[in-house]
Image (tube, rainbow, N blue to C red; front, top):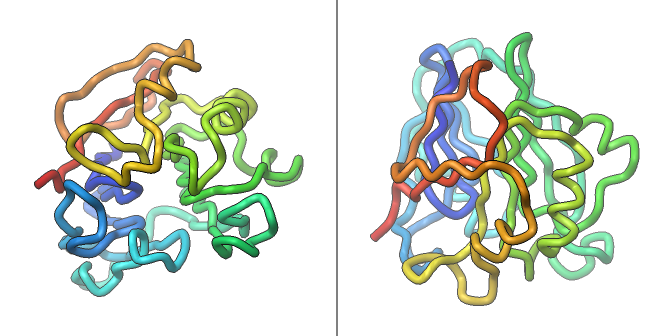
Length: 208
């Protein structure tokens, strides 16, 4: 069983067999409508070094445990011009014999054929849907349809209460998708292999 908690923006806390992972923590006064991430975890992963993704210092490291996942990285870019505008981005792949989770970070370029092959068929895909700083919604939808994720978790978007105003909304993205949508009305969900395929809409834990 994998517990997934959306802290807000692109930040998640994953708990698997008591092992805790935080991805892309952000600081206080960085994301409109969200308080900064202050968590504890065994390990912290950051997709890139922008302040809305790299507040490692806000995560208290727990005593070392063996990581139940193999973590691999696909080096990509934060824009369509090989990083000249916004720098680099790391796609994070967490995998073991039971699960494969892919966090796309702030992906701004279309993955190559070989990279797509590595992304194929994740159990959980954490995907930025707001555009502007990342692939636009049409490009993101095409990527999703090519890699066949089981559960899609949207991130990096805005609502009336949180998120940068220049990025798009959840409904902008959902209008282009025909997958079942499940609104959890809470910040967390539990993934197991019996879940049907769907888009999982969570509420950010760190709402102001």
